[in-house]
Image (cartoon, rainbow, N blue to C red; front, side, top):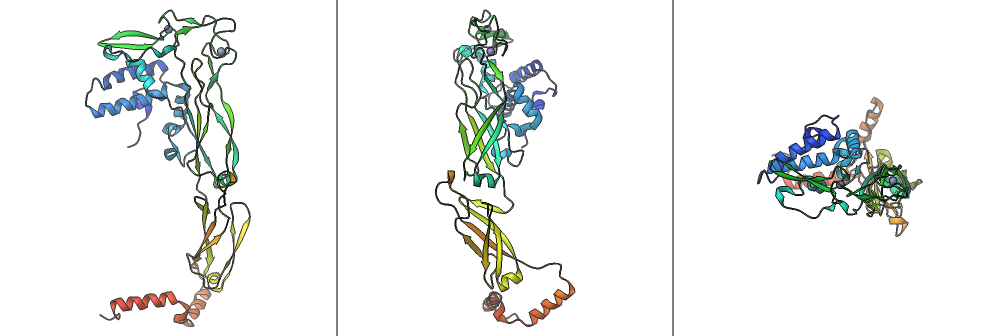
Length: 381
Ligand SMILES: [Zn+2]
Ligand SMILES: [Zn+2]
C-alpha cells in the first residue's frame, strides 16, 4: 500500500498556513478519534495516518524536508536505500500531539501538566551511503545536520541578560489551558507561553525568547575501516538541544554500503567474477584482477580451466573492523566467455577444430551422455 500524501490526509493545500493545518487537524482528529469510533479499525488507521501527517507538517523544518523529499525524507535505511542516501528523522513521538489536544479528554486527567518540565532533545537520524572502497579504507565524512542548539547568550532561558523568566500569567505556570468545545474538554498548550509555563519580559535578542536557535552544524564522522552494511553509529549528545535545560538527544548515523560494480561482499570476504576467453581457459594463461586496496593481483589460469572455477587470493578481501583482526580473502570466479559475432573465417576454423576433436577433449560432455544412455537406454524407443 503506498503512503498517502500528508497534505491530502489533512485535506489542505500545500500552501496551507500553520493555523489552517492546525484547524484541519483538529477537525479530523475529532472525527476519527478512537474514543468516538470504538472497534473501528479503519478509523483507527486513519487516525494514526492523520497524526503522522500532522506531526511532520506542524514542524517547519520537517515540513520543508517533506516538501523536498516526500515520504523518503523520513524513511529508514530499507525504504530509503537506492534513493539519495540521506534523510532526517526527527523521531518525535506522536504522543505530544495527542496529549496536547486530548490530554484531558472526557474529563479524565492524564499525567500532570508537563509544561514546565525539562525534556530531552529529540534524537536525529542520518542515513549515509558509502562506497565499498570507503568501507575498505575507512574515512572521515563531513555531514551537515540541521537542527536547533541551545542559545548561548541566554543559556537557553530565553531571557535577555540581566532579566529572568517569570511564571506565565495566563496558565499560572502550568503551560496548558483548558477549553470547552462541544462535549470535549480540551487541554491545549498555553498560547501565551507556548507551553513553557514562563514568560520572558525582555526576550533574548538572539533567539527571540525561544532559548534555542536553528543552526546547521557541521560534524566530522569517523567511518572505521571494515564497517558492515547496516552499521549504526551513535554520536551521543549530537541530537537536538533539550527543552528548558533538558539533555541533548543523540545523533544516529545509519550506514549503508552501495553495491559495487565488481565486488560482492560476504563478511570479510570479497567475491569477483572474471570473464576469461575460451582460448585462455583451454590453453591456460594469466589474468589480472583489481583489488579493493588499489593494486592488481595476477592469477595463473591453468590449462583446461572450466567456468565457475574459483581462485582464492588470501588476505586480499576486506580488513577487519578498525583494521583489527585478519584480512578476508578475495575469491575470483572464472566465467568462460563463449565468443560471439564470429566472422565466416572464424566459424570455418571452429568447424575444423570441432572435426579434429575427440571425446577426450570434453570428458564432462562424454560422461553426461553416457549417463543419459544408462538411464534411458539407447536413443531408439
Ligand atoms: Zn502560559
Ligand atoms: Zn537566547
